[in-house]
Length: 87
Image (cartoon, rainbow, N blue to C red; front, top):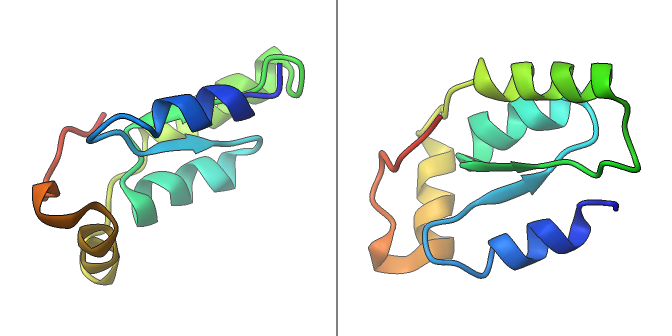
């Protein structure tokens, strides 16, 4: 489908920061700015080559920390501790 349901459902779980991405730049920023540890894509929305580019962009990006870490701590409360598992 679109990947929306997958993203919503996965974000209900503690420690999960799921990002629904439909192009490589969103995937890069999802990891750099939001420390996304789950990548969701809609199978009906993108083709295989674009999906490969999105995954590559996400895997080759790293969380930048700094001002982004402070925002994530506010969102997740006390249990958020950087660095969390990243891929």
